[in-house]
Length: 415
Ligand code: UDP
Ligand code: MG
Image (tube, rainbow, N blue to C red; front, side, top):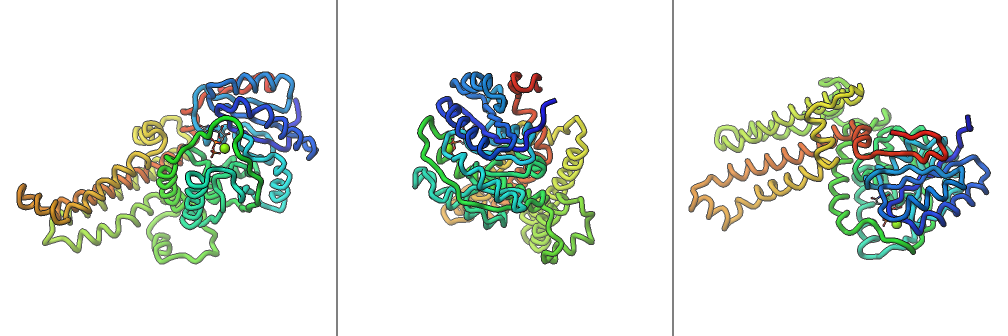
């Protein structure tokens, strides 16, 4: 059997027919110069143009080129995840397929990785994209991601990165998680570094994303903060909070989701107790919210445990979250929750409240409490759904893609 290459380059491509050939040639030139054994995995994410035709033609002459093809467009994250899964090298490089990243940066990235890191991120310090619609949102998003996740990387969105294979293969990627690889890698305790890389303007083809991603990225940030909060292994040297000290006494260490639910429900128990007596409906909604949160946490705990055991059958709730919610529960329940919450907030404001209380004789404060608590519940439903989806990420991936590996190189068809 042929020896495993030591280096794998992973490139997701979606409608990049003009770019794939010149990119492969550039990567090849760089890898030959490095002098290691290597493979280049192009993952065709269900392109409608000639991308796959060009790649399969090319792979007939190039033994280092491996082509993975999705039957339908599953997104950049799924494409990268598939590339990581099939990669055989101990070190992996990922990059965009549109020639915006420069393969000549690869040696620099590897050099940094060899200094003892598990992940080295490229930073497009001199980014060649539109200022207002691309660079400004990116600067703001990176700042927020850094603050929220505690991983201060300048450029999370840069696909040019180097990874230790043993580490990145453990990171669950689903949805549009490729923008959060640094933060997600901390869940498995990765050591992360960053270096400045070159960036070119796009010459051929179009960008696949528009301004719509800003809102999606914001929801993702909240979801990932939650996932990290629940799953991340904290170094023992770090100062632990009173809550953590208390939860060590009250819960078993593996009861992470349930512990989080208890943490979230506590203020509502207290509020419900305080309101009890004079605002009964508001008190009841707070108490019910607290109880439902606890139940949700308990069920999530069970789903995470089952996902770890890799039992083949998914429960109804896990199936609902993992497959029905277009793979991202927070994107559906988050906005619904936010709308209910805002509605609850504006109901007591003058013209609306007078209309409601005088014309329809409604108790505005109680109604507002019901809206606010159900908004919070919806949002939390999305968040706990994220936990379940995260725990089942492997299966989500299996569900969204049908892959086949180019037979010229492997001699086998996969899946
Ligand atoms: N891409 C993909 N699937 C998608 C969208 C994008 O594989 O659904 C690939 C795309 O072909 C490119 C990379 O992901 O190689 C980055 O996409 P793009 O250049 O459009 O993003 P931008 O550089 O504008 O952020
Ligand atoms: Mg690009």
